[in-house]
Length: 601
Ligand code: MSP
Image 1 (tube, rainbow, N blue to C red):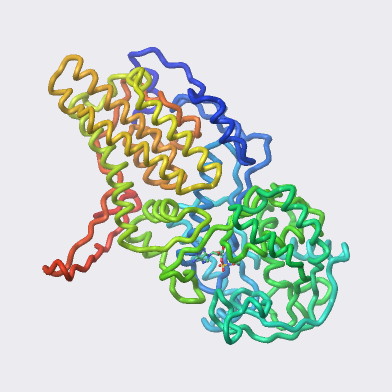
Image 2: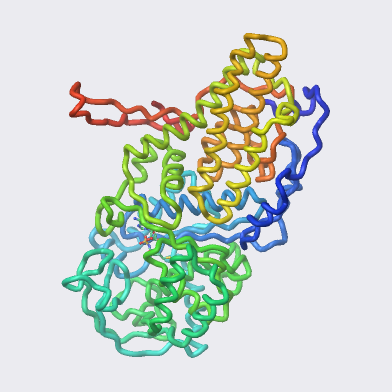
């Protein structure tokens, strides 16, 4: 409870006017200088009418995409990784008050998918329906809040692809020629023999490439060599992280070759408008999903309509294996069609198992569904975003997973909240005796929190998701240190001013917890909702939050907190066997109670 009415009726202290940030402007500007910097929305007290803060702005939307996933097999942890990261970024941008269009979807055409359908004994469209649905189910399990889900087999997408193809054709950038080369079906790409391993094996999939000879339509990529060089020189932020820019520049500087954009041997695809015997190359088709996804349901599908609904994308998030398609082919295709380029392509690293890319083709995947069912969505999201520096590769180990999640979420955050609420209940009848602003007057702890939350904001803006987690967790560490050093439990025993100081300490920690709950909400949304609810706020109040609510000073005297309940249960492990030298760690099968949102230990 403790909604709006409580905030205004029980307040024994005068209402503190909404404040602007106490941090030096310089720091804010420095952090805000990236292209994703957002205007700060006004500081409203919690529970205040959020309409002003969330009023749809006239600014262009923040359009964020994940790759459209191949439906040759159900999703694995590698595919989930990009989507979790995208969801965290989308949630952060929404907190900044932006209109976000978060696009994901499935890439359903091509030889690889047709072969997978055949192997499963289903028609291609039945197969695509099943696998595409499994992606949606996983996204629901992982708390992914996307705005658009595009399937490349939809007729609306097909209309956009054909129109785009015709534009490029009319621009003189498509021609017909024979091609002979080595093809990797898993990459859906002709390979340069120099890139291959022994026995003509693809270095990514470790499977032999097949020799193909086809009469194809080609896209005149080489025509765009100079324009692409100029693009990267004038806009180095186009490819991030910067070490991937070097890679892209070296491909371009090495000389660009035209690439084939049709297949005569593949039926499962969109027919080429000027030759129905061929189908459009799956990449030329799928990339257009980023635009066709923007169509509103009621619109008749046209390229221009889709473009008008939010193009260009602000950010394409992709894995490093598909960088060439996004940072070389795609901008050239868009240039040819006379369309604006996306603002940024970010190529993250791989989740690996034993040093090898985790993947459907290699069969060394980790089941995200199992992880979520055992440990809950928050734990999975937190571990991968905190542990893997966004941009680099990262290896998974279950022991590390359990250690990190227990130490950070159960101990640093969960226990701190629980024991503070316990003390508040015991000593203050669960009612805040001070405004958090008054409680922290002259207290350097407040400055520490303000600096850390500002650091977190900068890291989010720079897509440094691991560092953002770290900064927020540092608030928790500082809070634990503070409470241990100040020992409010003994202050309450002493009574008098010591008791007053102890009460202030509790308010200070709870204010820090409130700030943690907002700042960590892009990463662990359900956990943060549980923290918020433990702090006595309603779901509506949570929905109305913006990043400016991380400003110190929103908790008011008289606010009542509910009885403490754990917000995140530790993952328990059992040791099997009595012999220490032969210890085997067996993880309990955890059942996630989604209604409670808690992992039952
Ligand atoms: N269908 C294409 C993308 C077309 S976008 C217009 C495709 N699909 S995919 O399913 O094979 O891969 C989708 C994404 O998952 C890629 O960004 C890829 O890098 C990512 N991952 C697949 N395995 C991965 C890991 N083991 N680790 C991290 N990401 C990985 O490519």
